[in-house]
Image 1 (cartoon, rainbow, N blue to C red):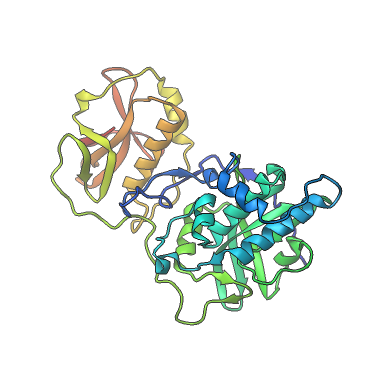
Image 2 (image 1 turned 120 degrees about the vertical axis):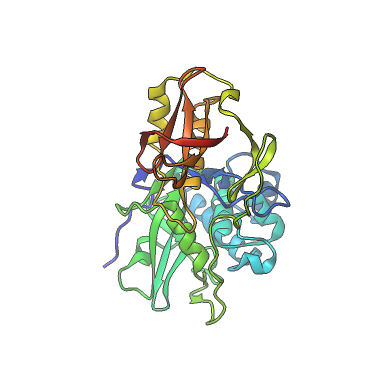
Length: 368
């Protein structure tokens, strides 16, 4: 029996920030938080326009022309670009490439190729509502592997799966549901889908995007119906920067605190923060609705959770007086990191992502 998924997406995910798939040029361990939707291009791009001219796409809007565009773009990506299952071995790092970068380099992994394929379809005139990049798993006798692919809603309303690593294409588009058949040799299991407007869960299994990224980093990738040969799988690597040794702190940009580097933040005393007018209820509304994910001491600890809360407050409440407080839990001496926010020029409070509420806190430093 073929499983029937809602390939358009079931529930919108509000938290769309990816933390470790872009880095400052020349600094592999200084990550740039990036909205996952930015990897799907909808603006005019000269690089995409030039690629489309090479494909001999139909110019009209007659019946069948949109399906033909999708198929020809799929063919172009699979034949003209090199699939790279291990980008680190190619000197590209583990970061996701934007579509123009993938085109320029002529290679990429399954996410890079899927982002490019969907961006090309949108640039060709196919509606953004008819395309998705899907993040999920492929299950086979070799194991379960993290993977990305594209889907396109045909002119008949059927969602079709476009495998970005496939070397030999079928003559027509293939139903996505037919490739999600239970018990098949290689079963596609979608978890998330996105276009330039939204990120969605697919199905009721609401896993965290960080879990997909961790699995994606630990397992070999799928290519043209065959998994990598034994011994060629990538070595598992953490999804956070290498820990930086503790160094003395002080005022100024690029300060080190514990094991994290914040290049765009300034460490300041508590009485040195500028103030703006936001109500406490509005700030707490944002902080309490952040999906902080499951605590993982090895790669997603209190520092990361507090940083995520601060960044999203700054994103949704521009200029909000909010930062990170580093110190210890009162009465225990246990090191901890929480969010700090101000309700007026003299009143600040501490918010702990672990309890999703205000707490008392022994603050030693603030990053804001």
